[in-house]
Image (cartoon, rainbow, N blue to C red; front, side, top):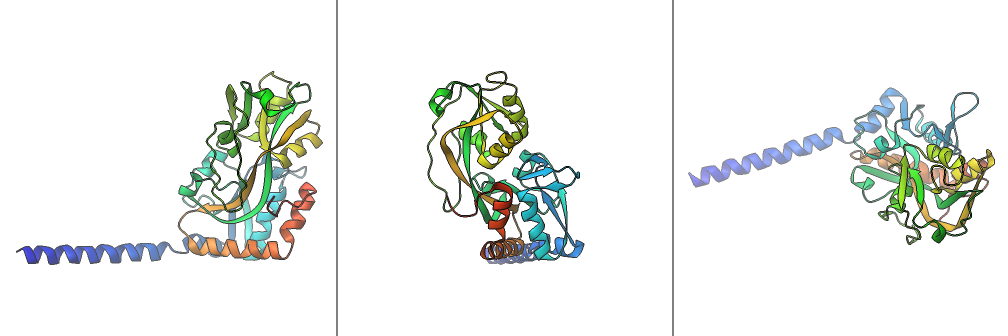
Length: 280
């Protein structure tokens, strides 16, 4: 009787292992297969974060991230479509096929890596502290116990919360140089910039964001200035939902080609005037 039970359990174990193997095999390459069979790469990014990604005067998506995504689609030999869900929805993972990839200057943090894969880092940017031109602040210390803003679910918000872990090779170490009294978290960085634009202390005393986005805002007439040295440097990566090693490998290969051929460097210079593709 005991031998029979043991044999039955062993058969169940083997059956379970086989079923798991079949299930994993069936899902392997599923996302890449969908992209190729549909002849379409659906990319999630922002529509209001110039110069990374924005809607231009011709009412079409444009910017550094947009151009990078377009080049990836070109090298895959497929068409491209952009979708613009909230950043918190993108970083939450478990996309269920609603889009295939995010090219949105995402930092590969430890928490995000639990639900997303980061097959390729494609550039690095400084995160900086910004104030209104009317502010008397001259250093990060001057903004301790003040109200600071950042996009929700962003690394900038995590930095202000003293809860940022950057899970990527080549990311320089950093310290928390500021402790705000409160944090204004809004759905987009643009919304935070619009609040700071109203004046020093009107809604917020300062913000943290990526230097390229801040420079873009200043060039557009926002009355901002950057305080001190960068707070930290972000390695920024392509993100995909977990579970498709073939798609990860394909994206990694394409981005490596773009780096080797100087395409990423040229796109960085085009949009930022600086080559951000090398480790800072």
